[in-house]
Image (cartoon, rainbow, N blue to C red; front, side, top):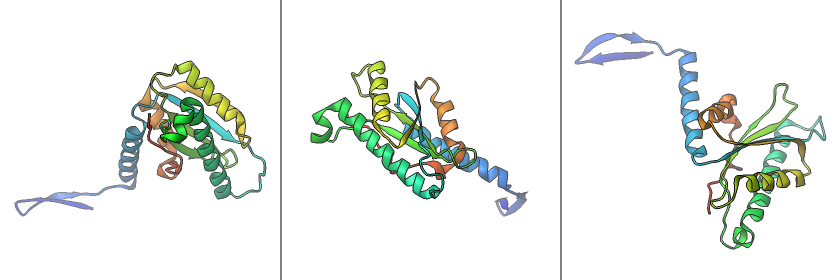
Length: 174
């Protein structure tokens, strides 16, 4: 409950509901994601293969995060060649991991920043090739150029801050 007073006069009380608090947190989280996604050019959705359905969800999430880090390494190595290792160049990425509707279809939504000077089609081919080479990922891989970053941010934010993966998110260094 918030009490509003000015000059010692009580102007009434305003109760903050749970729905208002949730909406406020969602707005804060979306704004955070918006700053992370700024300048990113592509949206990617990938799915973890369901090799062992009895595996614990937290173990599957850890395996997906490890696979995403490896995939980002492959993309960076392909885009920047030796400069990737020599100078630490890397593509920018923001990653959220969703459990799926029945917690059996773990998948990730990413935003990626195409390196300066690289054609969009060439970057998309590089990403698809890297995803294909990661054996832990399923066949479903969708990459698209971002045309509405606010819409994509809202979609990424739908599962809340628990879905954000700071271990896989990296700032671009070109």
